[in-house]
Image 1 (cartoon, helix red, strand yellow):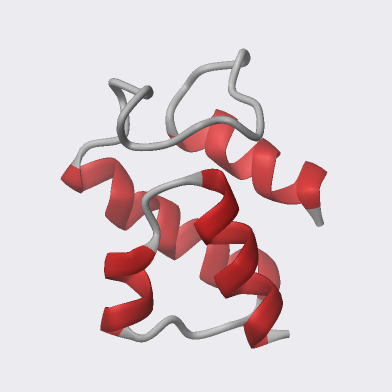
Image 2 (tube, rainbow, N blue to C red):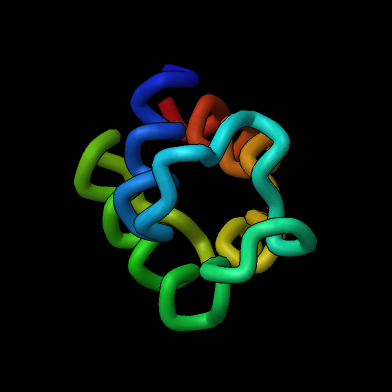
Length: 72
């Protein structure tokens, strides 16, 4: 799970150095457009559908992992 999410984050934000400390606060590429791209990629990769309130809560790697895990 961790590696799959990190791969998506690295691809969406075009940054191979991203690790589990990634958040909107320390990743310049995590803007509103890339946030939407992240949502689409997560939904496709994991076969899930994210709710608007879940999308709004996804502001770090850990939030993403927690929300995706809860949907599986």
